[in-house]
Length: 179
Image (cartoon, rainbow, N blue to C red):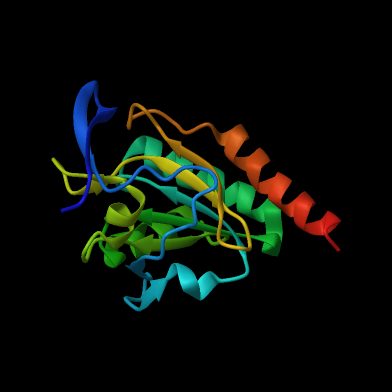
């Protein structure tokens, strides 16, 4: 049975239960299986060798999630091809397509965990009471090690954008200085 973490985060001030482990910097990034917007299966291992920023949102159709995803889309343009920015929600791929078309967000990859919540269970972002992802951000280096992890304590709040973005830039700089 998967680990349950009651009260790790709140949703609208109410404690909720997260299912899965708490991922911390230094952990090997767990693999997962999600769907692309065109309903094709993809996994973390499909991005092997890349620096990855993973962001999760409960639903692209909410105000904070919409703003968060647009913000990370803007940051993805600045990071360029040095970082693969992935946003994962439990929304159906059809809803994700509609949101992407309406928002014009095309610098990030939007993925759906709706089928079996593989990502949520692997990263401890699955909200048991609502079958949604909590709001979180992870940065993974090109070796597959988590270098930054944030579970936003109140799901209706924004993540710490600057810390996550600084973590991604630091990985890029460390990678460049290794050559």
